[in-house]
Image 1 (cartoon, rainbow, N blue to C red):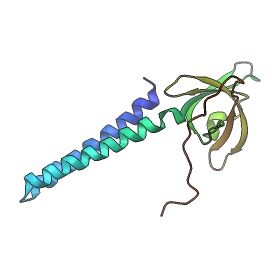
Image 2: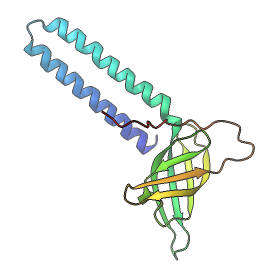
Image 3: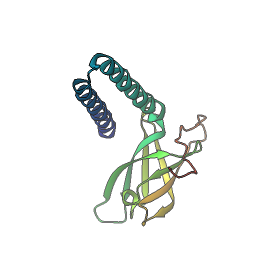
Image 4: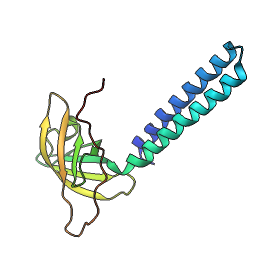
Amino acid sequence: MNMNIRFIFFVFATIIALINIQCKKSSVDSPDSNKLNEQSYYTSLQVQNHFINLYQNNLKATFTIGSKTSSLTLPLVTKGTGFFISDDGYAITCYHVVLGSDEFTIRQNGTGIRFSAVLVNESKENDLALLKINLPDNFKEKIPYIQLSLEPFP
Protein backbone atom coordinates (compact mmCIF):
# COMPACT_ATOMS: atom_id res chain seq x y z
CA MET A 1 0.00 0.00 0.00
CA ASN A 2 1.22 3.47 -0.90
CA MET A 3 2.78 5.42 2.01
CA ASN A 4 0.42 8.38 1.44
CA ILE A 5 -2.64 6.13 1.54
CA ARG A 6 -1.41 4.57 4.79
CA PHE A 7 -1.00 8.06 6.23
CA ILE A 8 -4.55 8.99 5.22
CA PHE A 9 -5.87 5.85 6.92
CA PHE A 10 -3.81 6.71 10.02
CA VAL A 11 -5.31 10.21 10.16
CA PHE A 12 -8.85 8.88 9.76
CA ALA A 13 -8.29 6.17 12.39
CA THR A 14 -6.90 8.77 14.80
CA ILE A 15 -9.92 11.05 14.30
CA ILE A 16 -12.32 8.15 14.92
CA ALA A 17 -10.37 7.08 18.01
CA LEU A 18 -10.47 10.62 19.41
CA ILE A 19 -14.21 10.82 18.79
CA ASN A 20 -14.71 7.48 20.55
CA ILE A 21 -12.56 8.56 23.52
CA GLN A 22 -14.53 11.80 23.83
CA CYS A 23 -17.80 9.87 23.59
CA LYS A 24 -16.76 7.49 26.36
CA LYS A 25 -15.58 10.38 28.53
CA SER A 26 -18.88 12.23 27.97
CA SER A 27 -20.94 9.14 28.72
CA VAL A 28 -19.18 8.56 32.07
CA ASP A 29 -19.91 12.14 33.14
CA SER A 30 -23.59 11.99 32.10
CA PRO A 31 -26.43 10.72 34.26
CA ASP A 32 -28.14 9.38 31.12
CA SER A 33 -24.99 7.57 29.96
CA ASN A 34 -26.59 4.69 28.02
CA LYS A 35 -28.54 7.02 25.72
CA LEU A 36 -25.54 9.32 25.22
CA ASN A 37 -23.19 6.39 24.63
CA GLU A 38 -25.51 4.95 21.96
CA GLN A 39 -25.90 8.34 20.28
CA SER A 40 -22.13 8.90 20.36
CA TYR A 41 -21.53 5.46 18.86
CA TYR A 42 -23.82 6.21 15.90
CA THR A 43 -22.24 9.64 15.45
CA SER A 44 -18.77 8.12 15.30
CA LEU A 45 -20.01 5.54 12.77
CA GLN A 46 -21.44 8.32 10.61
CA VAL A 47 -18.12 10.19 10.71
CA GLN A 48 -16.22 7.01 9.90
CA ASN A 49 -18.52 6.25 6.95
CA HIS A 50 -18.15 9.82 5.71
CA PHE A 51 -14.34 9.49 5.67
CA ILE A 52 -14.49 6.10 3.97
CA ASN A 53 -16.79 7.50 1.25
CA LEU A 54 -14.60 10.57 0.85
CA TYR A 55 -11.54 8.35 0.42
CA GLN A 56 -13.22 5.93 -2.01
CA ASN A 57 -14.77 8.70 -4.11
CA ASN A 58 -11.54 10.66 -4.51
CA LEU A 59 -8.75 8.07 -4.59
CA LYS A 60 -8.43 8.03 -8.39
CA ALA A 61 -8.35 11.84 -8.45
CA THR A 62 -5.04 11.76 -6.56
CA PHE A 63 -1.57 10.77 -7.67
CA THR A 64 2.06 10.40 -6.76
CA ILE A 65 4.59 12.32 -8.80
CA GLY A 66 8.24 11.76 -9.51
CA SER A 67 10.22 14.61 -11.00
CA LYS A 68 13.71 14.40 -12.39
CA THR A 69 16.38 16.93 -13.21
CA SER A 70 18.45 15.48 -16.03
CA SER A 71 20.69 18.53 -16.52
CA LEU A 72 22.86 17.65 -13.52
CA THR A 73 25.77 15.21 -13.56
CA LEU A 74 23.85 13.07 -11.06
CA PRO A 75 20.12 13.35 -11.79
CA LEU A 76 18.09 14.68 -8.88
CA VAL A 77 14.82 12.84 -8.30
CA THR A 78 12.06 14.16 -6.04
CA LYS A 79 8.72 12.63 -5.14
CA GLY A 80 5.44 14.06 -3.97
CA THR A 81 1.69 13.88 -4.24
CA GLY A 82 -1.06 15.88 -5.87
CA PHE A 83 -4.53 15.81 -7.32
CA PHE A 84 -6.27 16.33 -10.64
CA ILE A 85 -8.42 19.45 -11.04
CA SER A 86 -9.98 18.73 -14.44
CA ASP A 87 -11.05 15.70 -16.46
CA ASP A 88 -8.60 16.58 -19.24
CA GLY A 89 -5.56 16.14 -17.02
CA TYR A 90 -4.67 19.39 -15.29
CA ALA A 91 -3.13 18.68 -11.92
CA ILE A 92 -1.87 20.46 -8.80
CA THR A 93 1.20 19.55 -6.77
CA CYS A 94 3.71 21.44 -4.62
CA TYR A 95 6.22 23.81 -6.19
CA HIS A 96 9.09 22.34 -4.17
CA VAL A 97 8.41 18.93 -5.78
CA VAL A 98 8.92 20.25 -9.31
CA LEU A 99 11.56 22.89 -8.52
CA GLY A 100 14.32 22.72 -11.15
CA SER A 101 12.97 19.52 -12.71
CA ASP A 102 12.40 18.90 -16.40
CA GLU A 103 10.79 15.43 -16.41
CA PHE A 104 7.59 14.51 -14.59
CA THR A 105 5.91 11.14 -14.16
CA ILE A 106 2.49 10.94 -12.53
CA ARG A 107 1.07 7.65 -11.23
CA GLN A 108 -2.67 7.72 -10.63
CA ASN A 109 -3.67 6.25 -7.26
CA GLY A 110 -6.17 3.42 -7.44
CA THR A 111 -5.17 2.40 -10.98
CA GLY A 112 -1.39 2.67 -11.14
CA ILE A 113 -1.62 4.21 -14.63
CA ARG A 114 1.47 6.32 -15.40
CA PHE A 115 1.48 9.54 -17.40
CA SER A 116 4.20 11.93 -18.39
CA ALA A 117 3.40 15.57 -17.63
CA VAL A 118 4.55 19.08 -18.45
CA LEU A 119 4.81 22.06 -16.14
CA VAL A 120 2.23 24.71 -17.06
CA ASN A 121 2.68 27.26 -14.27
CA GLU A 122 4.18 27.59 -10.81
CA SER A 123 3.97 29.79 -7.72
CA LYS A 124 6.95 29.75 -5.42
CA GLU A 125 5.14 32.02 -2.94
CA ASN A 126 2.20 29.61 -2.61
CA ASP A 127 4.27 26.41 -3.07
CA LEU A 128 1.99 25.33 -5.93
CA ALA A 129 2.62 23.96 -9.40
CA LEU A 130 0.16 23.34 -12.22
CA LEU A 131 0.89 20.39 -14.50
CA LYS A 132 -0.83 18.90 -17.53
CA ILE A 133 -0.57 15.18 -18.17
CA ASN A 134 0.06 13.91 -21.68
CA LEU A 135 -2.91 11.70 -22.49
CA PRO A 136 -2.23 9.05 -25.13
CA ASP A 137 -4.39 9.33 -28.27
CA ASN A 138 -6.04 6.00 -27.49
CA PHE A 139 -6.91 7.02 -23.91
CA LYS A 140 -10.69 7.44 -23.93
CA GLU A 141 -11.46 7.75 -20.20
CA LYS A 142 -12.10 10.99 -18.37
CA ILE A 143 -9.67 11.66 -15.57
CA PRO A 144 -11.41 11.74 -12.17
CA TYR A 145 -10.78 15.08 -10.49
CA ILE A 146 -11.43 17.06 -7.33
CA GLN A 147 -13.59 20.09 -8.00
CA LEU A 148 -12.19 23.22 -6.42
CA SER A 149 -14.53 25.74 -4.86
CA LEU A 150 -14.55 29.34 -5.99
CA GLU A 151 -15.89 30.39 -2.59
CA PRO A 152 -13.65 30.76 0.47
CA PHE A 153 -14.50 28.93 3.68
CA PRO A 154 -16.70 31.01 5.99
